[in-house]
Amino acid sequence: MSTAGRAAADDEEELERLRTEVRGLRARARVRPLIAQAQGIVQERYALPDGESAFALMQRASQRYNVKLRTLAGVLVTVPRPDRPDTLWFPRRVRGPEPDLTFTRVHRSGSGSRGAVLNAVLSSTLAVVGTDMGNVQLMDRARGGLSIERHTGLTADFVDFFAHVGEEGTSCAQAARDVAQVTVRDVESDPVFTEPARRAILAAGSRACHSVPLTSASGLCVGMVSAHLERPLDGLTTAQTKFLDTVGGQAGRWLAWHDDTVVLDALEHLHALGSAGRGSRFRRS
Image 1 (cartoon, rainbow, N blue to C red):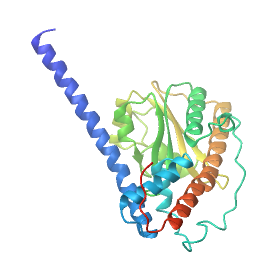
Image 2 (image 1 turned 180 degrees about the horizontal axis):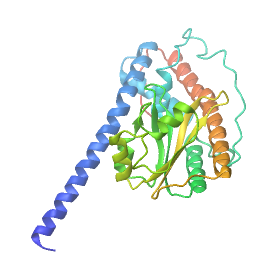
Image 3 (image 1 turned 90 degrees about the vertical axis):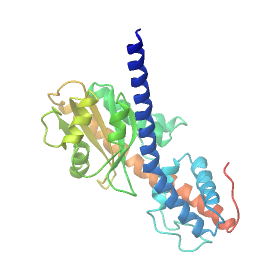
């Protein structure tokens, strides 16, 4: 390789390193304010001496119930505070049975974490649509809109751009708003996208997409699974959309159950630890 060629290769490598660093900084910037807000609430509520102790309490609850720290923080900052420090946080909640998922058995195999279920939702959807590109988003309780939780086959720039989307300008936002499946047959011409969103999707090699809302028993959209294709899409068959309705409904009910049961169990555990150790110093595990 010539000197000029090596220099060009080095420049490209450095540019990609900088892009990766910027994406990482943006990802941390999206999460840190939420974690910090939750830390402040926990520190004040249990009279803890510092934010490190608050983080340690959150970490213990997160690890015990296999709930992501940012998921725990998002619920913590949005639910009403406990009535009293010496009682259960949610004394009147009703514990329902775990919903069944007919499209996967992962939740019955001992590895039924939320992540495992989301992976199953994504793989089942991609298999039906016939593609290897897609993502799962969940409703962001703290900010509103949708945040990416799982993805495959998509570029790092795509995931960075669509890490969080609002209520307008994308097909997944429309599907969440209408609580209905949305097919984009041709990304290049569909008016649902803002121009920046369209450019980001096309740059990732997606020419068509199909979004399926994940819905609770009451019909609320709690998340979204989207499949992206490298070619324009004529449409899906009735059998395909019916199966995807099943995936979306069952997954949505399971996610709502997980939020109302496992995540709240984690918060109850945090509350018990904080109440028992009020004013104490805690360390990370």
